[in-house]
Length: 330
Image 1: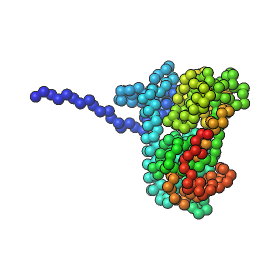
Image 2: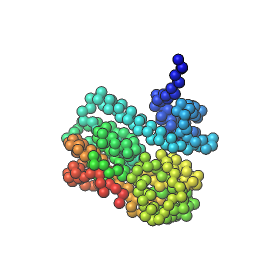
Image 3: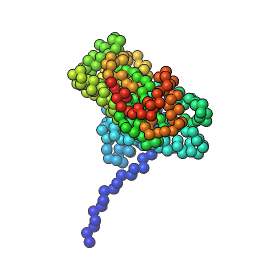
Image 4: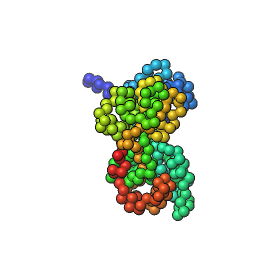
């Protein structure tokens, strides 16, 4: 009897969370030296983790540009996006189990972007309600699409989301609005301007957060460029502000960033300027499920919005205002 051909072995998917985190940090820093420092491990140990993972799955996550620098492959970009989501879900599972164990009856799970204004985040944690004096707030950090998804599925009660996508299952109430900023070298011709127009940077390569991070903002930038007849030479996608700083410092383009990220840049040779295009003012919204009738969530949302808009929201706004034209970039 002829022997059956061997079936190709399937890859083992038991990747440790520390390895997933290593890939994510390297994708953010694009430098083995900086990523190893952030992870508190040696550079050879980090290189070994990445090489073993790539060998196991037989595809490259990173392209080595030189002794220190790397860039993501397309496979690496997809891997990092899904790894972030997976680690977020694991954190949610642990948080929910912890709060159940501790017996918190009035618990709010609230999400926000890693780049959210820390004043908002601090207020979420320390806010207290008269009718719910015993209240436990647990916060989670993730990117905008994941925030909306977790609110939709009920894993998060509320979230602070910059420019959320339209979704009939959520209510999104704007409470802040800010321009996008451009980060460029101090020697750039537009660096002395108070505000920068897109036409001022039309001849530069653009460095943008990938569409997976902020789809509405990403699309709005290209829509504004098209309206003005501008076609960016090249658009580099990034996952973190350190990547933007590195690329701009190397003279490889200008970075378009949200206000909190832009104001984090403290590098001498880089200046940040607001973009003058009024269509690129970005709303940040408090997001909740459209069908959520919880008195706790309603009162918390009311208190937060009153604090940051200077006026309480109309009841109809919380109950009926869906993520629609008011949450788009005008």
